[in-house]
Amino acid sequence: MKKVIESFIDYLKFEKRYSDHTVRSYGDDLEAFFGFIRAEFGDIGLAEIGSSFVRSWLASLKDQGLSSRSINRKISTLKSFYKYQIRTGRIEQSPMTPVISPKTSKRLPVYVELRDTETLFSHMDFGDGWNGATDQLLLAILYQTGMRLSELVNLKSTDVDPGNRTLKVLGKGNKERIIPVSPSLIARIGEYSARKLSGFEHPDRVSLLVGKNGKKLYPKYVYRVVKKYLAEVTTIDKKSPHVLRHTFATHLMNGGADLNSVKELLGHSSLAATQVYTHNTIEKLKDVYKKAHPKA
Image 1 (cartoon, helix red, strand yellow):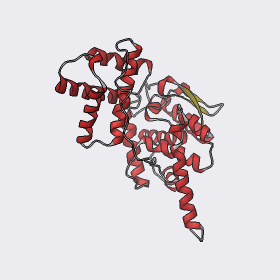
Image 2 (cartoon, one colour):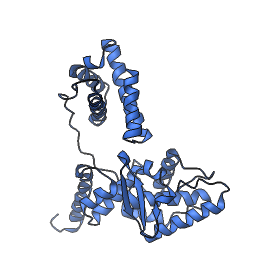
Image 3 (cartoon, helix red, strand yellow):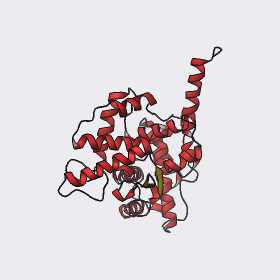
Image 4 (tube, helix red, strand yellow):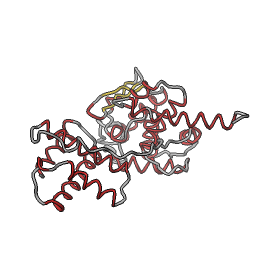
């Protein structure tokens, strides 16, 4: 079974080009599932695992107190895994076909209020050092483009097109998208790049953003920076790079942006993933109505 899992993980890494974090999550889910199967039913072949075995595992997760959202993620992992096994000819049918995902309550994306982002970018002191310049730029890119953490750290210097004022982003599934940015952000990127080349003896010329050692940023650094600075301007519980992605989308929608355009900017494969931001807009409208209308 180990080789079967490894083959699937390689497929996620090299064909689907999923992020390391996503691949790790898939791997952890599969290890947990097949560990449960071995413990409960012994060493059985892949084709012998039926839907009742899957349901037993899901029931055990529910008994452990796992949320419906977490269980649904594990179901998604298994569906992808078995779909791949059918494609490679290891099995003829998936045990996931009759498995129904539990219902989840819709959770609105957490985002930073506009006034708080204005405080972050207009009044925050980042200092004159290299870390301050890097921190300020990575926050600006995340907020002005809505790109994912993995997309940010893999952003190349050649992905910047100053003439057209765009950034080229390599997203999930190796899909490229072009994101327009403001003249001020293009100027800031230009200044940062020039400072990088003059300030380091052997900087990473490929990666756009580098740390104080001149090397490519690692995801944990970006996560810490975002958490640190968001804590200065907002009291929301979650403070992560993905919150700035939600903030980008929500502010666009609140400003009247077209849903399809936001979908393209975010790199979503379907409108369903983007539509959640319309709920935030509706909540905003309700709040405005409640505060402003005499009959509210």
